[in-house]
Image 1 (cartoon, rainbow, N blue to C red):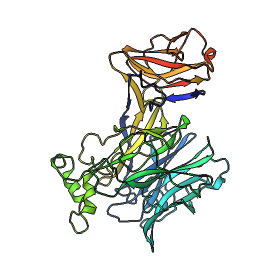
Image 2 (cartoon, rainbow, N blue to C red; image 1 turned 90 degrees about the vertical axis):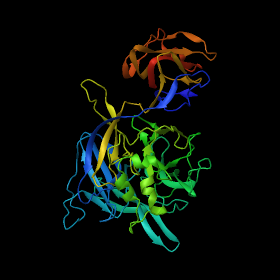
Image 3 (tube, one colour; image 1 turned 45 degrees about the horizontal axis):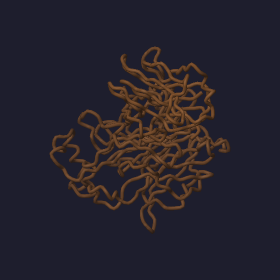
Image 4 (cartoon, helix red, strand yellow; image 1 turned 45 degrees about the vertical axis):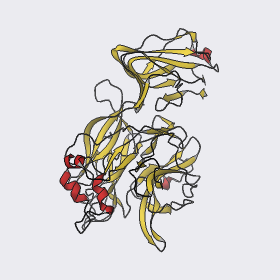
Length: 484
């Protein structure tokens, strides 16, 4: 393989020579920081979810569903904005009326959740640059199903219906999630990642239904007419139910796509663990139908639990997905460990480091208290740059070695951290795994996203030669490297 200048993260083992690598690749969990947003207005309701964030130069827009369970008003799409991505305001927009007043932040009505995007296609008309894709339920002669409707806007606030998402196949009633759509400037196509289903996992005896929630990838030249759907290849990860996908291009390098899909786990039996689990009483209440009975079609509202995974892709069709959770419901607080936990907002954003002089962080926002008697809140979690997964070594030296490649560039940087005793040492090897003279670094220690690695010879002398990178790690981990 040939590596151009740019970022190379260790979110998968595709570049790794697994025959000699004994450092461990694992997913990293973000640090929970603070609650930053609350849906405490009457029109927002207790089931607000499907948040999406658009990052502009020095400004952030957030779109989300406002709804109640049980339903007490129509579905609304609501809007908030922020200058720093942490402190959010709900502007009074005077667009839709609620209980006799337009003094609210509602921008659309009757849409069951909407994904908002800014269209980077240079040929997109200015009055269609902002798009919201939202599900709308319909009764038809051949059954009850859901359309995915596209609304467009010039200013990101005033939207009008533009078209129906025209896929080659009908995905009956399957758009009721956060369906993500992007224009990829690398290959000049639109990509949609939508909620569909596939046949139930063969190797999972807990499934007693005929289908499993899943993700389908479609492409388009015009954002109106879409290809036949293709199921992603998860390269050996467990076949589990995935609900919201939260896929987006990585903000530092759009060649990579990342996703934080919600994993849906439905337990079939109320057992001793449910007896002891947090919020027993309201969990049982959620399982009842309108007649106060617990039936098969409502029991899942108390028996299902959700968490969040991390996955990444270099081509948008083949995904490396960790089975270990990236986000869990967290310490039991009386309102969590339920169906609706760990729904992240789409839109990972850069926020300032929390301490003076520290590097910027990546903030991920995740809702809590979904569908309870408390307002939904967004919790801010932070990752280090590129820090979703990494190779790690304990208090014993381990090796991470890449496959053979040629490359461009004359500078190498690594994103890593160690203990005071630990280190990362970097070497270039030839195609026979022999060290190349002049290309062995010192033992580097510290914690930074961009450490310059010096060699006694210039890296440009290795251009177009077949080489491997060899990392020795001791009480350390490495997240990525960059060629410049």
